[in-house]
Image (cartoon, rainbow, N blue to C red; front, side, top):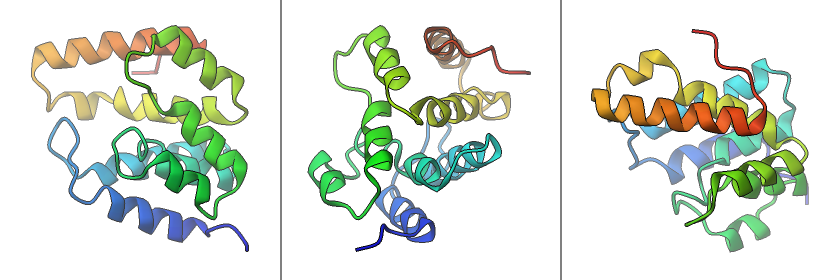
Length: 151
């Protein structure tokens, strides 16, 4: 069976996260769309774009790892989704090492961090949350060897 086409992955991700809002109260699908577009603009292929649409699905409980294992998706897409899925109690260093060890995952995480760090999104947050997240994202960028975002 051929893999799920990108438009179907997008539709599934939008539905799976339909009730979810981001930290600023915006529909979560806006974040997924921005990460998918960020991957595309950075030269990512369809397997990475599909992973971008699904990058938070397991972590947020929208799907299970079992669903992902059975999904009609390329193995590379599944591997990237699992690589960028944070695990409870996991050290940031271990998380970063898994991303770096998984082909294609760094580009997806880079697009995710870029959107999470966007000052236009951060302005909607209270100052303490904004600073906490700025430091968290800067640390992850450093662990991944990514340059600081232009801003």
